[in-house]
Structures are given as C-alpha cells and as structure tokens.
Length: 378
Image: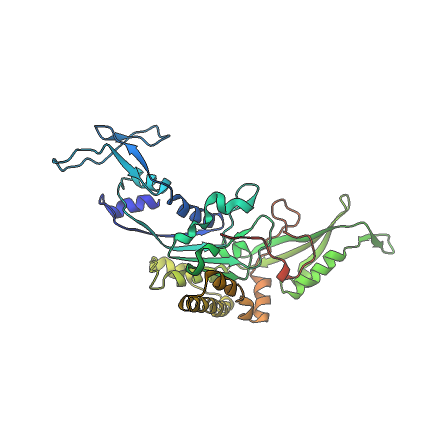
C-alpha cells in the first residue's frame, strides 16, 4: 500500500528524498523494525532488454522500463539499480524507478513482541530489529505488567538518545488495543499440584493449595481482583488446582497509549501529520476516570522526555541515559488508589496458566515487581 501511495504522489517524477514514518504493534512493531532492516539491503542491478523489458528474479511476468523521450539518448538503459531491498522492488513494481534518498523520520512502536521461531533470543539478529536505530526518532510504548513466557519485549536500546521508551501500566494488548468493551474475562491466573487436603463432616475433600492462597492475597492487595472475583477450581484426576479470576472490563484505557503516540509524533521537530477528523475521533477520551489517569501518565512521560533532553544537552553517554531512564517509573506519578481501580476495572490479565503458549514466565508466587518478562536488547 505504501508503494502505491508513493506512486501517486510522485506522479512519474524522480524523488529526491522520501521521508517515511513507520508504526506497528506487537509483531507489527517487529515488522516495522524489520522493514528498516530490509531497506538497508545492498543494491543490485537488473538488466533491461533493447526493447525495454526486464524481469525480477523469481517473477514470471516481464515489466517495461519507462521510455526516455530524449532523442539524443538511448530509449532504454542497459540496466538499472535496485536500492532499498524488497521495498525498492515494490516501488519499481508501482512505477517509481528513482528515489535518491530514503529518510526514516519517526518510528512509533507499541510493545514490540517478535516471537519468531522457537528461540526468541536471536530474533534481533535474525530480523534486524536493531535497524530501528537508523530513524531520526523512535518512541516505544511498552507494557509494564506483561509476563507471559512467549511475549519477550524487544527494547530500543540501540537507538540511544534518539529513542524514548515509556513503560505503561497494563499488559500487551492494553497498550496496543484490540480488547472489546464489556468483555467477560476468565483467566486461570495461577495453578499448582495438590497431594494433601482436608475433609469436612460430609467427607468432602478440599485440596491444600498454599501457593494459590498466597497468590490470591497478592493480586487482591495489588488491586487486580476483589475477593469475590476469584475462586478455586480443581481437576481431581490430574491433581491440579486452579485459581480463576473472572471480571467484566472496560476497554477505554488504550486511548492513553494512542494519545501519547500522537502527541509525541506531532511535535514540530517530527511533524507527523494525521487526518484531523480521524485523529479527533480516535483519540477522544470520554471516560472521566481514564482522563484522570491520562493526566498522571502525562506527568510521567514528561519526566522521561525532560530527562532525555537533559541527557542530550549534557552530552551524557547513551548507556548512562538509558540506565537513568529506566529508573523513572510511572508508579511515582499515579495515585495508588487510582492504580488499583485501573487494574481492577480496565487492565487485563493476559496470563492463562492452563493454556499452551499463554502461560507465565514463572511458576513461583511473586509480587508484581518480580513478575516481569524477559527483555531482548534491540
């Protein structure tokens, strides 16, 4: 689609400088980063026949090069150069044959999760996810509460001072969106095996579940669940106990991340332009409580941005800037009671301890500050 839009904008003329803004969520964020890597591919030549036809490797259909109307020069070149990898090929497929420079202006990422293949530790190398450092500015909005085993976050540390990463409350899709309003969420938030238990006067057996009991107290104290939203379920044949949480949640919190992205990308130095009607419709926060939370999150993001500006002005090494940025937490800017309300009514619980691929990274009973996913340096 991007190449088609460029075709109409170019109107058959050479392009001196093509400025690109890229956005993506989850694997879409990984795809956006891979796109930057692809455009860095080495140029290669494509031969042109005397009558102007050429083929790309692997294509069955021939294409025709635009005829040179200058009678003093050959009608067609003997060959031409493809730059910018597969993207350059897409441009040519849409009639754009000459782009002198590609400039990546702004990259907006929502919680990069690549999950490529079986071993996620080599995704940065295999997919070129650190190519994002080529951009003028990179903003990543990341989930602070995601801890599923298969949802490693790829950070933007390679960007140094040109990167800004905000850790926001919520799980993966609380940040990127996709939850429906009023969904009834049922999650097995913890499980354990049982061997012992007690029997009442009617000889009904109740398994002993010390880990589930301890984790229940933790999630209630953190605000995720009320006592009546949690219950125990048992599989007596397998000897498994499940702590199950059930809530009906609202989906208006994803407006917070969206507004952060729009606000930063629209700044004068980046100049991303949005359709005003669509922007107003999509970014409008009609929920008074979320508007209140947004103000507190904005104070946090302002602190991170101020620190970045100071680091640039003071010429701090990139490693120092990144380390100090990690010490700035949204927890210091949001009221505890508001955070508990946010968790209970708006934020989802993505871990499904009984489902393959959605289980937690840890089987231990852990407080929130220890329930963190693995982070890949990108």
